[in-house]
Length: 341
Image (cartoon, rainbow, N blue to C red; front, side, top):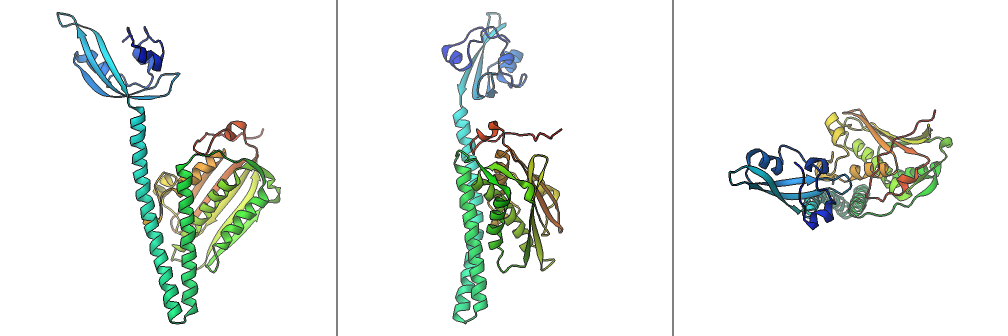
């Protein structure tokens, strides 16, 4: 299994590894199921795709062909192995697959929004012709809600499609939470949903990208409102938005008494293109929300019971390590909270 001869292109990509065992160089190659091991086993040519992952290099997706070199008596003495780097082709294929899923998901979401807009316009027109101001007001409220959903879809698409440097700034938590609450509370006008805000004055300040984190928290609050709207079991609902400090962290606690989620929905909630709203959701919102929070070195937890509501807890450090701030919006770093002694 030792490498005896290399061409220059192989040296350029992987370095001078003559004399090394093949599976010492390529740690993730699966011995036994790869074409090299198969040719060693049966003495015949083989081909397949392999993932090559040298210790000091990026991973390569390669198409691999083997050709046995035999003595006159048929004894296998060496194997000629040819690699074709298809990493970019594979990435393009994966990106196109994700793009197709995203387009399909967004199309279903927009279709649901357009249905809502048509319903709102119908109420406005019929109320206007019949001089029924109640219908007009109801139609305006529905239309306004659908426009807000379009804004959320556009934000999700732009965030998912483009990397950018996060704009870190130190922000007063009380001021920030009040801004988030005021923005969200405006969207609950004339709805049977009570909004409860409670922010501990001892929260202090933290380092955040204000625009991104604000969008993430509002998205959680909007999901809470949707869960309440879809719950026919009771007329009045409550959404609570609490914020308090704990062991060097700022915790946002968002709960509702809406329809809730089962265990399977909770498990998939932050997966790309998964939506609890069927055709009315794009499957981007909670995926991006989770991504934004993790980019802030934070964590998000969810507890839910069908018919009894849902609770989200977002924990964020009030002092970010420099390693977190060096990452762009398209990157994630796993960050463990250090508990004080």
